[in-house]
Image (cartoon, rainbow, N blue to C red; front, top):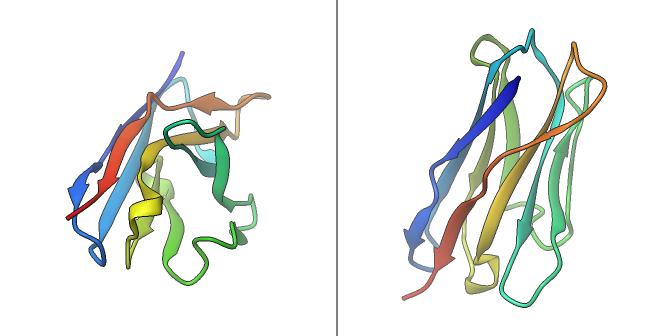
Length: 117
């Protein structure tokens, strides 16, 4: 009953930027908390960024200072701004959202980010 649609991925050169979006629709009143995860080739899925109910953000050490997670309550959307991208950032990125009116989290379908010359 809740759908998360991700967009914004693609191919970018090292040092470039991308902005990922995760739009929630369906039986959702608002977004309580959310996060972004990624899974590269041959790697386990790992946490990239979190935004709490209060709006506090946390990041993996590998992306601190380069990535920023945010949310737009009016649009029920979570964003991930990615700057100074590196080849090692190449992965499928997944959003994860907990709606305020659900006692579980929902996953997006994933969007490919490729950083290469």
